[in-house]
Length: 377
Image (cartoon, rainbow, N blue to C red):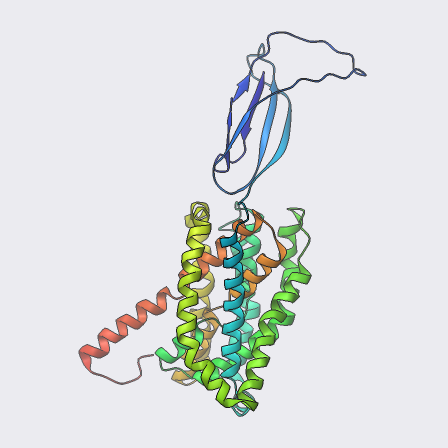
């Protein structure tokens, strides 16, 4: 009797499940025998699994497996124009945000780092030592049973520098905006060495087990792609301040429109990714950024930073620039590896600012009721 089944029924289903052969054919060891078998494999969700074919002896009541074979089954997305547009928008958005960040950095403001390096050292140390180790711990505990691609993407996110929307939240919480921008710059530069180190040292094992080469070229391309616009932005603010003002005037509108477009296209194209999510992935993706907030804030209190710097250090450490791992995924992988790997960046992106939104709304209500302008952290 032949039995057929998919290892992961979320990816595919097989029909028929078994075939029974009553006639016995005896062949010599040196002889060749061919038998055509037709089965229907119905794809369900995007992913990678194996079709398992088992040969059993029907006359044996113990149902012992005589032999079994595995065949790789891959469910991928068809490439289309919308997918190409989405990737172009995503890359353009990362470049534009990096350019805007560069236009916020003025050389005199960087002198503040030299005068008071403590906040930057705290944030950078936690960002590139504590969080990567925490991310690796999550891959060995909470999501140990998930795909190695999911583990790799979580670990890559945990190695990413601060950035993203950190400056916006720093402004809303009355933090040190100049320090926030300076931290983002320093961490982006440090990431050029720290991310390759961690991915080689701990992250490579996840890819090697999937027979995927470590994407060093994609890693360096993604870093350079996001770092170069920062340098261009710094040159613009230094030599063309009027152009920098124009860019910043349009920044909010362009960012909002691109965010809406990317969100809509992402949902349309990758709606089936949400079926791959589970509670353990959400918990792991929540622990990374939220731990960054808590650890950085407590460390800042230990080193007696002022209120504004404590707020800034916590926000800058907790909000990571997931554009880095997303760029690595897009440049290094193909479908369905891209879709599977995108699970953790999406979850981390969804969960990162939730405590900030909650805290901001709560403090707004408190300040409105008490009409107090005293520092609240």
